[in-house]
Image 1 (cartoon, rainbow, N blue to C red):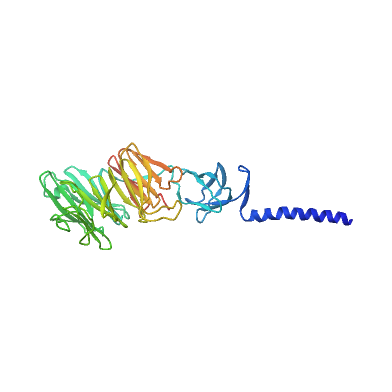
Image 2 (image 1 turned 180 degrees about the vertical axis):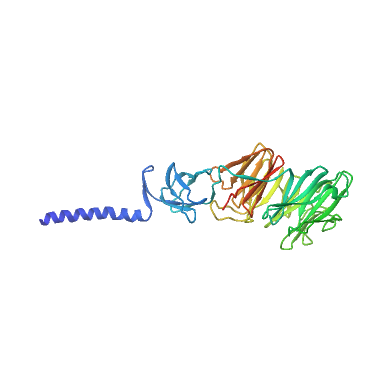
Length: 419
């Protein structure tokens, strides 16, 4: 090999090195050639966490891979910065779709994806049911049934799947009295009944933890604070109430600068979530403004108000629209600031019931349909219809992860919808 040949080979290899080395370094640092925009750009990533596990992830119609077996998550790296159509599939489940943007040197996340079964099995819990109430510990259901001599209350114990009779209409010393209201004690051992006719109302305490159950007539509970229109006692012992003059009190001290214009013969209630104080006047909702120290109009036509399990979000229904108010800053994508509102959906049918399934998913009934919705408002919101039946009443059992439906006098319980 001549000296000239060696020099040519050396210069060729040097040129190749000078060309390849920078490209290799740029490649290792996440840079790629964007042919669409004709430039070299840094890439981003996509992280997904999905229930159930082993779900298929598609990007722009192409299968990437399945989520891992242990955590149900997937990380896709080296994606060019642009919007991608993401679809997640698993046999027997509704798919999840969303267009998400990938940015340079960032990982776009969707960590709260749940695929729900296309077919949900329901078991018959009880027939001939007029109404039902779950105990706070979610271990018992009180059922109202129609009997030959009027109505009766039955106790259904979920763990034992046993139903027993509590009381009947004939046990109440009022002729043709109807059950107007039922609430549980915090320990789930008692039920408080309000029973009455047009002429008279009586109050009873029903001790359901005793065999047989003990029914005792009680005097109506007086307002905790005299002349209060609405009262709320918190777990931290803070006490809020609205008096007849329209002033709001906290622990005995006035916190509003001007009186709220209260109306005669109007129902008022107070709800307190984190640092947010709401006053409900019939179906109008007002929010206390700590700067002006007065109530501002928040929403009208409100019939449902539910706080999420993580206590960071409030779902409310206003004129057949579902909204989310963020009570605290959230840092998971999409990040939200405290006080931010998100519109989810508007429906033509009245929304009758709504429950949080997780802190990122809602189940609700509208007309004859029952639907589940995510609250991630990036791109479109994924909503699936899981059942259709006549005028359903629903309840979500957090402890069992089951949905209960009352329709046409039959109470059903679903299979577990979450792990």
